[in-house]
Image 1: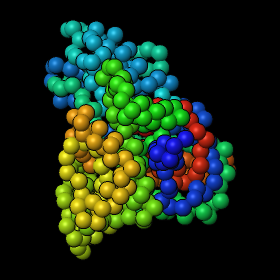
Image 2: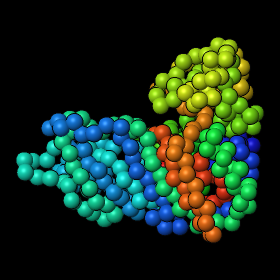
Image 3: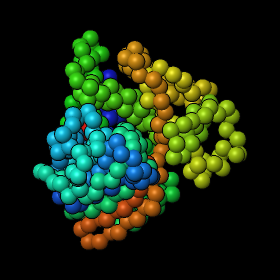
Image 4: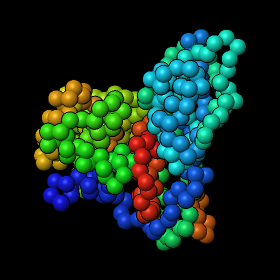
Length: 355
């Protein structure tokens, strides 16, 4: 394995932890009931007539499979089904979809299929778009827990107070990092996969790899939850950022109360940080310059992602053999990023999901 391939696998599959080594081991997702996630939209159906906003519970099915089933039930094309995010197959997930309004007198509420059920269907005016979420709420049961209880207590306190590095999870990189191989083939001159979703998975994995590479470097430097001069700063809870010059007391205070966050790149055509933040990012990506250029050439516009994420409402209950966790995360953040700062877990069959 080349040095570049090894570095990519490390950034994608085993990036450095922020709070020290794990406090022990546990089994994650022993059963679907052990991992529950519920989308929080932040809005309600508006009563418009063009679509139906569906609240769906799924188990043992991936989101795209449910999209195809809902399209069949609604008599529309899969591309006409809207959804906000991908959810893991190995979970009980409650998420939202939209479909074009059915014929008069028809309803999808109460409909069910293999591994899913439509809990409600409300009139709504617009198709649901990717990312149109307030966040996700998680309830996780870890089994076969073997931990040093005092050490775990320290980890729990650190995660609750400081948050965790906002890594893209291993799910983003495919089974055993298979998407890394697809990136390598593309960089070597091969074509991107045909089809919108397969192509998007490869491009998304490439951007995620570069982000994780920068974040891993900031974790090693101890600056993942600090602002550097020239930082592009995220406004918490918003998809926007501003350029900071020197870091003054006001910015430090806002950082301490989690109103703002340092960011890393979602590579493409667009601005980069300057000064110390820019130098740190450029150094981290020096070996990956050609991949960043390829993403820009593919037409992607640059964006930013917070380097840290806070687990809101964080609760933990340790009992003999089990650890229960409950918390909320913003859209796009991975619950596994929280779990890995606490304990090691066996490898799972990864999927393209937002957790």
